[in-house]
Image (cartoon, rainbow, N blue to C red):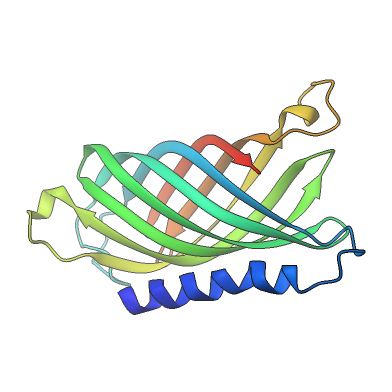
Length: 184
């Protein structure tokens, strides 16, 4: 499965190359790299283990780093890819990492409404030091709110408040997260 992660990262590296190959006169098409820090909870259900998820209801609070790139396709449409790495700060989860593709629509001056699909690996403290990583498809949706759209006087802002909810497998977990992302 780590091969899948490296393949996704290699594919993600092609997005900036394709964007740079575009004619510079097409101003609406541009890339926007971003980084962020988020926090939240990942709560797994207690049904029988399916889709690579353990059969016990584990839960943990997380701190997560996010890095990605958005590409403005046309008008308000945005596509992108992001990678995440999370560390459990309390509960049953030791760490998580994953990669996801995103598609969204810009709203207001600088905000973004998005959906995402990807793959995530999870390691649980509760299963011991040499426990296997559990993994599966992840999908979710969220919104990034710009300070310019929340009553600020600026025409645009590089800082966004991000709120999202993800799930893993066939709705076998819920993962609400909130934090700040900065585009550059």
